Length: 120
Image (cartoon, helix red, strand yellow):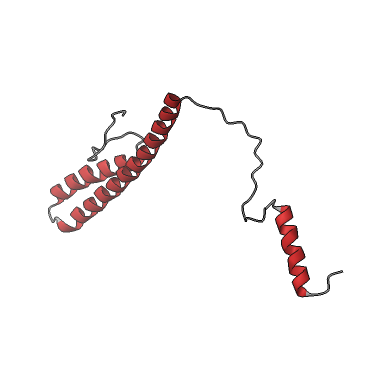
């Protein structure tokens, strides 16, 4: 029988530690039954290279979409700044179309400084 609050808290703490398999050091025990294959050094390098490349591609496409949004903003600014209708239509067509294409394409269309496709 639980007599006071302190004893109740201790029992609760012991129950939580037992439930989550927490040792006294505060670390959680990991019981893994998953098999992870071992890789050679060259395979590990290839895996790291492709993970790095995937991250670089992700950053590249985020930049490309931001440049596309910037081009659309520039085309809207041209619409309000230029008074002659011929120049407005050409600026809107040029910047808005390139901006929309940059936003919605899955291809690399911009040349961003520092982009290098070299392997090592």
